[in-house]
Image 1 (cartoon, rainbow, N blue to C red):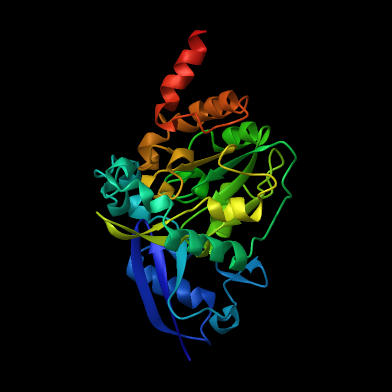
Image 2: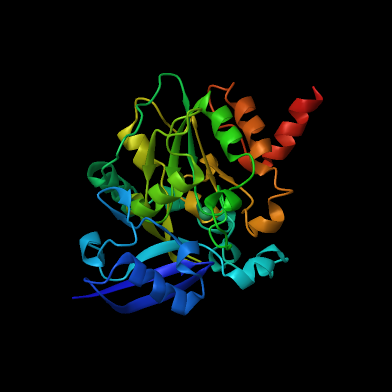
Length: 320
Ligand code: MG
């Protein structure tokens, strides 16, 4: 049997299909070197696991039980490209971010359309939540996107730390005082797990994650202007945890506004964190948002807020 996989590295995808089940992780790393130029000892393959542990070099690929064309994210840089990494990157033109749209432009009845509500009901029933920590009485709910919200998933780096958005742990520590925290990313759970471990979010002693949701909890909706799009409907969480969370006490951060289409009022569009090597020095979005969350946590009902104006809200509070 041959083994095929796709290596995601520095925003590119590389297909590897020349290996068999008898080949080892080291053979894989050699193949990756031949297409990316990254030396095996500098490669870190996120999510490549056997029995829950990172697969060692001598492990046979057959024992990893990978589905064909499984995507694996790699960290690591070429020797010669360390200089490139530190140089200013080209202007970012990520398609999803560039093609994002204002919800106001879209017909607002998307969130009330029966076919969409039926899809949410189905997710409430069928999607299995792997609860890490139970909801806490009286807490608000914070739902966080991962890519470009908590870290830059496209730049080259040796470790996740280099790509992490500044103040991430301080932000989560502060938010956890008032909010239960949920991570929701439009990728697969295996990826989300790997990224959260890499960033040091999983198992962090200063805060806890309630649970994580992946792309399978999302729904597709038809929009008049952009056609079919995938969105993250908070109704899935409200349906499952109606006792604790509702539109009155939930806020969701995402760098892509259309993810809020089913619940625009609850969404806060965060500036995307890109080009980490340059912006790491100056990005203070999470620092400021921690203060916003602190302020609004005093309210019993979030439905009167317009999160588009969060910075204005904050500066007013600071003047009084
Ligand atoms: Mg994102």
